[in-house]
Structures are given as C-alpha cells and as structure tokens.
Image (cartoon, rainbow, N blue to C red; front, side):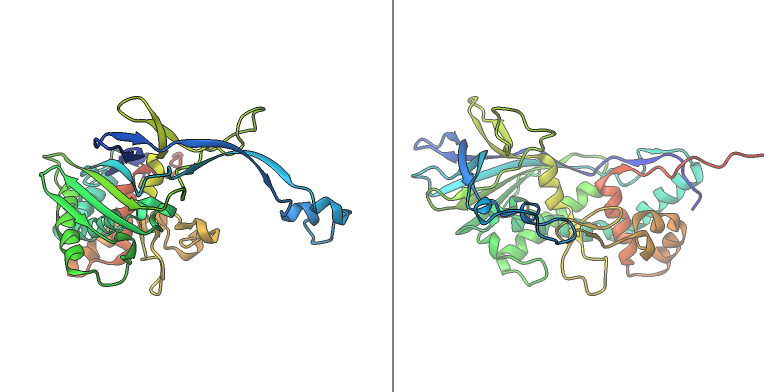
Length: 345
C-alpha cells in the first residue's frame, strides 16, 4: 500500500468514567469515600542501600530502622456494606469502516475495501466476542475483581439485559458455563452490529455488583502527579460526583478502555495472555514489546502490506490473525501518520 502522510481513525469503543457506589436502605446511591491518611512506611527501596552497580552505599544499620512517613489517599469498603457497585456506560460506533483522515486516495480505497471485506467475512464477530468477554468477565474492575463474588449486568440499547454471576471465576481461554456462554453470544452479536452498522447507535450500561468484606481495600484509578505539592497527598485517587453531588471513588475512562481492549493474543502462536491492543504490542506487566519492529508484526509493518492482506482475505475463508490485529488497532483509534513524503526533484 502506498505511504500515507496523514492517517487517523476515530475510536470505535468509547467507555465513560466508571464510578463506585453503595446502596442505602431506600435504594439510593451512596458514595465510596476516599480517605486521606498518614502512614509510617518502610525504608526498603533498592536505591536506599545500593548504587546502580550493586555496590553498597555507605549506610549504617540504624538507617534502615527508621520509618518512612507518607501522606496518601486510600479507599476502603464502609463498615456495614456487604456489596459495592461499579458502573459505566459504553458507546460502540462503526468507525473502522473508513479512516477519519487519509491524505492518500489510493490508500483510503485499500483500507475501506479491507474493512468492508473483513466485515463481510465475519471479522467483527471475532473482535466483538473478545470485547464482550472482557465486559462479562469484569476485567475492567482490575484488582477489584478479586473479591468474594462479582456479578455483571449489561443493559443494551435494544432493551436486552444480560447478567453473569461469579464473573470473577470466568477465564479467557476456558469454556464458560451455559448461562454465561448464552450472555456472551447475545452481547457479541450486539457489539458486532455496532462495529459494522453506521445507520444506528449502539450503547450499553455496564454494572458490577461486588460482594465484599467490611473494611476491604478498594482500588480506584490513581492520579498521575507531575510533582509533589506541600501539604497534598503524594498518592491521590480518582474521584467523581454522584447525582446528589457526593464525591465518590472512580476509574478513569482510559483505564476501563484499556481492560476492554486487552484482546491481543495473536502476538505469538503460543501466547499465554491477551495484551492490550497497541501498535507495538506493549506489555506493561513485563516491561517489554511483543510486536517490536524487528518482528515485522507491529501495526505499521502490517499496515504497509494492507493491499496484500486484502488479497489474502478475499482468497480464503479463514481470516489471518494479522488482519484481526490490524482492524483491532483501527478500532482502538489513533493517529497513524507515516511521516513526510519525499520531495520530487
């Protein structure tokens, strides 16, 4: 495919901010408060005792016996609450059908035809099933998934309501119970329509009911701080407002989206984990890249051969994993500009 100076796609999945709450005696929403607390931590980090070359620093034994005072924010289940809830909205749009911006007409035609053929071959069903799995498994709860029980409820724009109990026991690559499998099938069909149909709006409200113990620690998003500010906690948690104006713990929309888009297990034939969709297969937990340019399996290397993938897609019933990955990155959205074109003359 010819090089494209300017190329971008609008994301197809748009999650909102997720908010935590509990229910009062009358069914009203009550906040999950974020506490500010001062703790005495330990002096245990590497740099305290060692230089980069592993040679010991000139310290005394007493230096490690003193505490490390910290001012932080933390979040806990209120005493008396057996269940807490976390909820967000999700909008699905068919934005992979054509680029949002493409400065090369030939490239635009290839990409639009590739997406059309992918849809015709049932490719969006594969992406939709993977997104649906992460929604119903409660992957988007992150560390808050590991509690006594998690029940997921999804209300779709077509008025269907899907629910899965013991969602925290579901696994990505294992067979699901009959009820959960039925919900997955229905949600997959709905999301697939949203990814391929420009004529209508597809949206859903997703809610998790989490069974907890009194005083359990919860894990909202953590705010990124550019610098320490005197008198302010050095660790701050995300917050938002409930309908009555009370401040409650929350997840950033980006954190929710990262979990939903953790569907890439195409990066290796024996891949043992589905990582977040990324142009270079960034695997944060391992501090590495699964699609380094040297593998020629990164988004840009595969995009360059989009016309060849279109030919393969047209000649076979089985969609190549590389094409699934390409369309998944387009669904993620982003600016994929390919640099300045060479000047003539």
